[in-house]
Structures are given as structure tokens and as C-alpha cells.
Image (cartoon, rainbow, N blue to C red; front, side, top):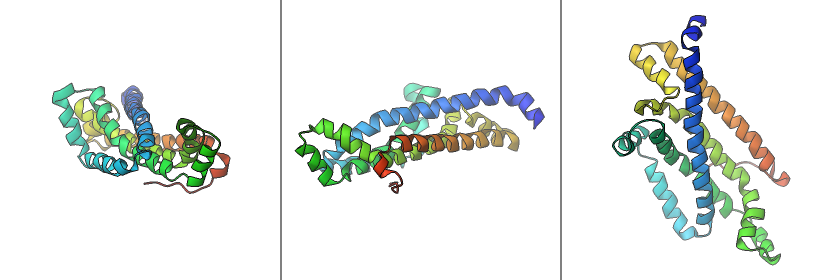
Length: 215
């Protein structure tokens, strides 16, 4: 163990930082795109089903195939890896945002209208806060998945803990495989716990303890 850290300790810190950068950047982009889009789709439910199904079809494409597809278009490195992971982050966040907004009690919506709230005010002050548990469930799910899938960034020179895993497979060194796998697992667990804390802070008091809907 000491020999491993003396030889690879610095690389482990660098690769962990790269892994976090790739996965968290992708999930942040996913939130910035999927949450507003899910809110918009809740206003056009007839179209929402088709669009979410289309996004779901895109996610059936193997992640390695997506990465390979981007190579001739935008080259190799961190950017194509982030872009590929971004696509994979969309569905859970988009679907949960849509479901959360759609399932807000109709009487609550009518009460908002009765108080003279505009459509935008209803979304910000009533519907979005009530949808937080469902939306955060989608974000947590995407984050855990993406931290695991970020290991594939090594396939196109994106760096991250996947470098250790691929090197371990190529050199038949289980210690390198574990050096990539264990930190990635720990990062996923920590990220999930931190997001659970954030969810608890953002959730209205009356909704705390309500079962989350995970699509």
C-alpha cells in the first residue's frame, strides 16, 4: 500500500480532480438544460411524452459508441467526454422535473391563480418548490451514474480515474484497477449524500419525509 501511494499518490490526486471536473461539469450542464426544459414540457403535456421518449431512445446508445462518434467531430480530450456525459444526464433530470411539475396538486395551482399569480410566479413560488423532492431524486440519480461513467473519459484521452482502470486492465495490475474503482465509488457516495442534504434544505417543511418518486 505504501509503495503504491509513494509511486502513484500524486497521480491519484490529479486523476480524482479530473474525474470530479468531468462528471460535475456534465451534471451541472444537465441541470441547467433539463430542469427548464422539464418545466416547459409540463406546459405542453401532449408533446412531452414524445420528447421524453426520444431522449430515452438516445440513452439506449452505448456510451462508448457516443464517445467514438464525437472523436471525428470534436476530437479527443475532456470536452467530448463532458458532452457525452451531458447527454446521459438529461433523461433522469428531465423526466423527474416533468413528473414533479405535472403532479403538483391542481387545487394548489388554482389557488395560485385565485391569488392573481402569473404563470411564472406560480412556477417559481409554488410548483417548483413542491416539485423539489422529485427533481432532486433525478439529479442524484444522474450524478451517481455520471461519476461512474466518467471513467470512460479515459477512452478518448479525457483523463480521470478511468486512466488507472484502463492501465490496470492493459498491464494486468489489479491494484491500478482498484485505484480507479474505489475512489470513484467513494466520490459517488459522497456526492449522493451531499445532494441529499441539499434536497432536505430546499424541500418545503411540509413535504419533508414524503417518499421520493424516482422514475
